[in-house]
Length: 250
Image (cartoon, rainbow, N blue to C red; front, side, top):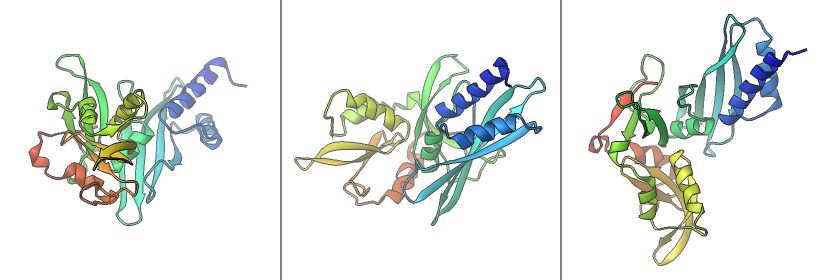
């Protein structure tokens, strides 16, 4: 029978996986409990998600460590995105108190979209934000990860202003905040926007590098360019020299 401390620890880890977007699947919980009761000091749990573009698949490997005192820590997870045409992309995401990308944000990054993250500036000890995206053009670093391209607070990305300039129409005022939050997570967001004196239903992606939204129709063709969805990564990465970028390692 589990003690109260053991129960609290297991429940904490289950909640941690839930809030990071890995769900509450019974098999996931059983694998966790079996591994905690096992003899291995380090163990992994595998799971997957269907929250990708239709042509993609993603697998996650969650990595845990036991301390000598018996405590168990969720340290990191590896996300591997598979596409039948372009192959595989993978990245290790670290789990920390300050900032951890959710499973969906990891998918968004691997699919080439930017995600907003908050962090403490070590020089000022103040909370700041940056929009980050994975740099697939350069080799992985010594940790087996892609470097990040980041657009810091002083780069001037203001999602609220970008949305207001993009002719997006909201059925209710409160929807605006929801759209902004979703765009900043790197999601492809369903929207309505004005075009040629008509209101069109489509989708939007935040492009912090150029401080605008990429707008698509319902079939995910780029508005005005007829550019298909597979071009999203290029939309976000072309003309890198036009922006001030830095690479950071995580």
